[in-house]
Image 1 (spheres, one colour):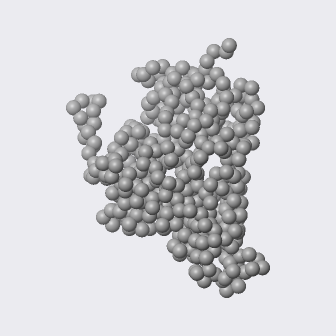
Image 2: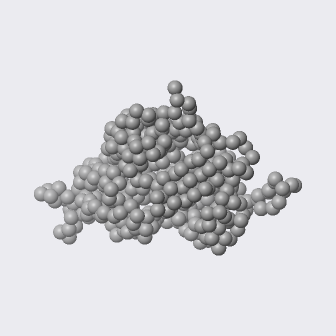
Image 3: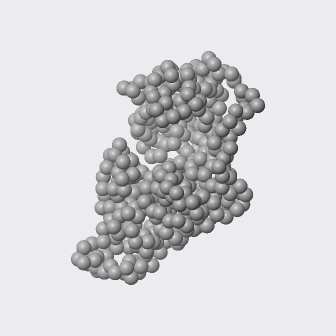
Length: 403
């Protein structure tokens, strides 16, 4: 990166072709906060200093760690159109508490409502409006390929044949206004409304799943209706987050589906605060997670599915920092790096489909569904609501006058 012709221009050069180069400029922060590791660690802890590092129509005004709130006020140095609102306050709350706060008039917006009780609370408010759109969030079932039984690819594929992803969506979304929408995901790399999406998911076939398990050496016990080996019931565990309806529901749904193919599933309960560490440490057999795609989904697939090697075979730990399955495959890596460097969009999408098919054939994860963005807002709140890839200009958000 070098200086341009004047103070308003910078020239950025890349080592390799980078097809999604606009993503570089999606978020820009000053060098004073990012110049080195020590600066980054210290610069964002001091409130006055953070305010000096920010730009935009609002600036940070106050952080209350006890109340778990962040307050923004109008930025007097903002060169654009002045924001309509004088102040914006963010609260850290779990979903049900947030719904209660909305009902009490303490919140004016509640984005990404995921459960029926919260939605019912919002709908009961006379001053509320409910908006719905597509979203960038999606759910995926992960297999820990380092776990003893799941190291076997054929075993993973047998399980995959017995798991109906559509059943998870119907169950998770029951009672929500998105329940009747087709939110099925048949791709690991693109959302259904994005260009190039193809449903490559294999058919569900419980009978074939049981046949495959028998061929892997498991014996069917007619009395228990489970497969066994050496007198032990074929059993896996599901890492379940207690108090999170989606996780609890998906654990139950997976247990029901695996029981039909003769596999027992035990719940391994963990708190929300402990989940990330357990996931990163590989302390699970199967679990489910939420991912968030960006407008450049193919530029981030390496984080989810690449090993810790780049295209040339050099160590690259950052490439796979979200690959919690522990799976590594040089063929996958090759596709991921080809996609990242391919400037021709059509070729890029062909590579993406080939990569997706390879992921299905390896059986390391199962996309379940993508979420609809169900957002509750104060009915007079304008220029804010439910979106997928679109964004709202924060300076335009405000309240309509009372009638």
